[in-house]
Image (cartoon, rainbow over all chains, first blue to last red; front, side, top):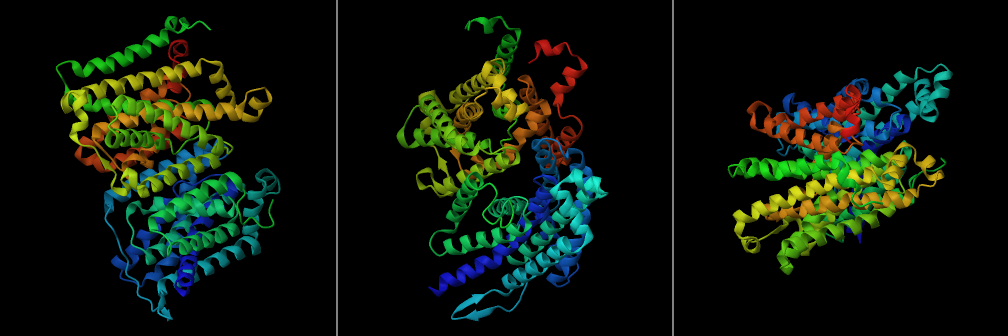
Length: 286
Length: 325
């Protein structure tokens, strides 16, 4: 019985990191109605950011988080001007394809540089052992940092003028423009934020599991599942969605082979998408 | 409707000519190398042409279109290997089964629109892949290998490869024909209306839910048969190869490159993409950058030439619109 509980707790810890990745995806969708299909590539960029900091520079793993966050933001703003700005307001197909094209380019470059071999960043943190079950230190640290970053994001969106501008543009771009908000710059800012969150979650995931250049796809799909659970365009819901996904994984792991959990995830994904397109955790929004 | 009217259209004969050219070109001097190149081109043209029914006509992006191809392959290989069915019967049943399955899925996920639908199609592909990887009758993650005995009814492996080639070229020709006959039909007109503005189409009497489910199902049939033939030719099938999301999105690149919404465009795009890909793969410096180049190409098309090649040709020489659909 306690084993199941331990598995659930661990699932929730890891799930919150998926939630962080999904917040980035859902923020971009909410503000500009663009599904960022280069999200997975950005997660991988964060993973390799962590790898470069620890392996090449020899610094401790968690010092990588601030530079990854900052560089991710810059990369996101740049990407907005290159690939997204021209497709804003065009049919969904166009933005899906342009961000997917970016994904292809980045994955192609990554494969050319690093190949598709497995990378591992060893991080040693003491865990907590309780009744014979060990809660890994890295899992707890990742969940803690996720909570910190999510809170900072909340403060930014709800307590600063710039955050207010982002929410205004998400609500109604034309009205925001009429009230004197430079909407284009706000869109670029929001895209940068979304990408920064993807990179950061990638760096955190890399402290937990080994990864390859191609890992992004799996985490991008997880982000979709989480986003859909939380309701597209709803950052708060995404965090709940991540925790729910982690709960599901943790709950399923003791009862069935790990490969079946993927099947369940996608069944849940498609069913929720069809039956509850606004998500399961869309509190107080209509 | 006059059944023979189609024979009087010049575009019908263009399709026949393309198909004949594909079938006859490698026979010249028994050119096996060319045949292997064209077999891939025929598969790509089938995939792109059927994907275009959904993207180009109805305006729905199907990111998981490869699920039809993979499932068709699995149905066929399973029937051939475990139940000893002849290839053609197995491939056709694969096509019918996948089409019916698509109709069922379509009724559910086609209630979604735009980006939501695109996400759901990715979910369907990944869900099916994960399911097949766990499904023991289909060999789970290791897949199914077929023995060389399966090629005997077709006159041994050498002869079988030619037979499969001609069958695939026929499937390719039928794909173009399907695309053309849908585009020129009332059904196609309804789909194009859905692509322009679904609500307006619905108000004007287009039965949108039914039409969307039909076209989703129709776009599954020929790719499933192509998958059946393709994986029979490779003599093995496994989940990662069958439900490759990358090939799925490459098919979208082909459609966009040639020009979505036209009949000949996706085929042209698929052919050019295949040629580009094989050239890049053989040049040492570029072999790692195939994805990068495809990505840059796609980005440039999306940003600067959303009509693709055919869009450009039609704009440059407006008269070609009358001949090249």
